[in-house]
Length: 64
Image (tube, rainbow, N blue to C red; front, side, top):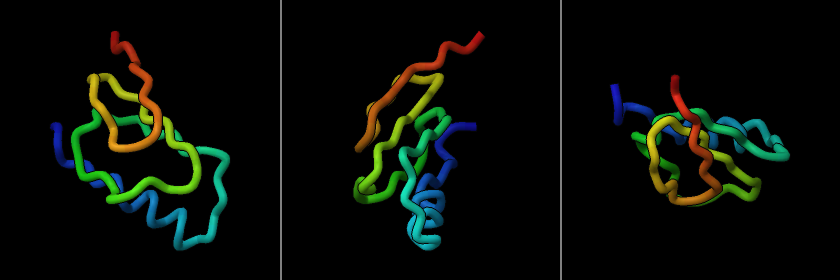
């Protein structure tokens, strides 16, 4: 319903499992709690609503 997503657990899981991703792609409406800092790998936020993520790149997905 908007605003309830906690984005942090995904980034924490990547770190806890000592992964070195080429990139992380997050599909979201952009409403939620972001990590405090950017990870060392690229992040692409793909969303149906326009938003300005605190780090990474944003791509708009047209919903039909």
